[in-house]
Each structure stands twice: as structure tokens, then as C-alpha cells.
Image (cartoon, rainbow, N blue to C red; front, side, top):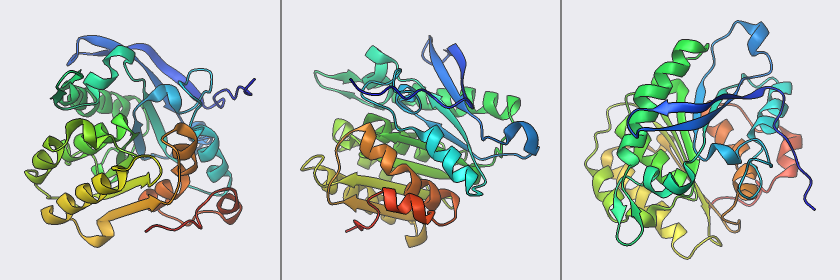
Length: 274
């Protein structure tokens, strides 16, 4: 039997039924606060993560958690500045719909625009009002994997005025291809934005192509080399274990600072990008 690893003490459920007016339904929202939040008096960057069930607590997850809370707590012990994580549960039966901007034949979907509006226009203002955040776009990140990667890419570009960092792990771009690329190509690149694209060659025969296609669109929009990271691992599963392991290098790339050496040893970071 798998060992159950509960969420760290500095993770709480902000609400079991946070109202989403754009979608006329409610959702559980998780909140991770840095270990020194109560005593530091500091303001923190915020990462909005999708599939909130899978971030902290094995018991709440579909197939094991990323353990983002333990990872950030370890980094904090090594003098990392810290960040607030807002974990938004997926909607179960509504997951495909909410994480896809456009419907797909025979599969449904198409509520991604309303979901993006919820995160940017309802949830973010609430968090900024009630917690000590650095509300500026350069300190605000959207992060997700698979379908959550698709919606992070869309949300970050649609609300580029609010999100200056976009982390896209193993994105299910196929679900809205080619529309997601056609739409992205029409966006405007007004502000410096950090985009981190990551996946592995063993997840899918199409993953590499889709990641490169997204990168190509962004380059044509005018994204500079220093704004784009494309990390293609030679191996890795389409699962929380892989994404959890990849959290640290992505976090450090987006929020600054080297990866601590002892954490480096535990990971596969020597398996360099193509």
C-alpha cells in the first residue's frame, strides 16, 4: 500500500466552495503560505496552479501529489524568498471543459475563456486583497500540467497584463490544436514575460512537436531568448511524479536563484535539455 503523505502544516483549504461567477459553480481552493508568512511582514509572489487536488496531499490527489509544499519548505530552509501558492481544484466532470478554451468534436470543452476570467478577474483580486502579495504581473505566475498546461498557456497570454510568468508542463495542446496556436499568434507581446515550457520525449510522440510549435509562435510574437525556456527531457512520465520533480528547476528559473546542490542530487537535472 502506498505511503500517504499529507499536506504540510502551512497548507490550508482557503474555501471548500469558492464561487466562480463566470461558470456558475463553486470550487475548493488551496492555499500555501511560506513558513515565515506570519512573522516576516513581507509581501510574496503568487503562483496560481491548476489541478489543485494534485499539488499537496496524496490523499486528495488522483494519482499522487507534486508535493509542492514540501519542496518550497525545503527551499525556504535554504534561504529561498518564498511564494504563495493558490491551488485551484479541477472541476472533475468539468475539468476538460474548464481547461479548454475551445470545444473539441465528440469530447466537449470550451469553457476555458470563462475559467481564465475567473482566475484573473475574481480569484486574483481576492487573494491580493486578503493576503500580503506582490500583485504586479512580474510577480504573478500561472502554472499547470497536461490540460492544466494548456489553460496556463492560454490564461497567461490572454491576461498578459496580470501574469508575467507562465509555466507549462507536458501541455495537452493537442486538445485545441491548431486553434491554440492560431489564437496565440494573434496576441500582442507588450510586456516582458517568462515562459517555461517542459515535457519529455517518452510522454507522447507528439509532445516534442507541440512544445516546439508553441515556442515558434512565441518567437514570432517577439518573445526574446531570455524570456523563453524550452526543456525537453529524454524521459519522464505524464504524471505528478515527473512534474513534482521538475518543479524546482522551473521555479528557480522563473523566480531566480540557483538550485541547491543537495536538491540537485535527488533529481535528474543532469539530463539536460535538447
